Length: 154
Image 1 (cartoon, rainbow, N blue to C red):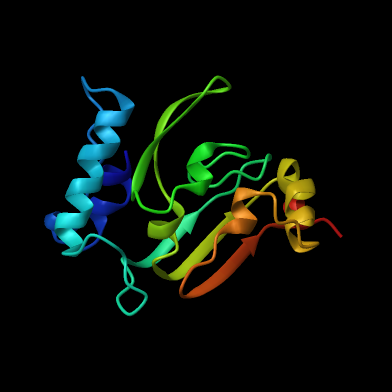
Image 2 (cartoon, one colour):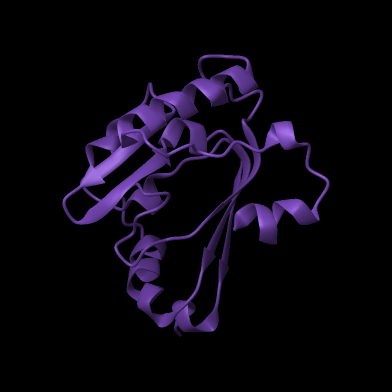
């Protein structure tokens, strides 16, 4: 869907698009293969603040404060050496996520927040909460928040 609706409409070299291959493999194996692909593309085993991996990273935020399948209380929140991880917990379907070091290797991080259901969590972040994954992200570049009226409240 992302390819059809977005990527096929802009002049991005196919070699710059890296899809997570999840067919017929475990979430852990998919995460490991994806990490190897990203490292090969980047040309290093660790992100460098002098050469951010991403120009722009678009993120949403969950009503619980999760971002990029990094959920509150998940052990993946503390992962600092791996680039990707399987995010598996009893409350959510298994997912593949990028870890903080890779997400933080961004020139610009853009949060798109909409809907009244996000109002309370957005207020907590604006009030300085540090226990939420979305509030723990510390990119090397700038952070931009685009919030609709329903999420912003008064």
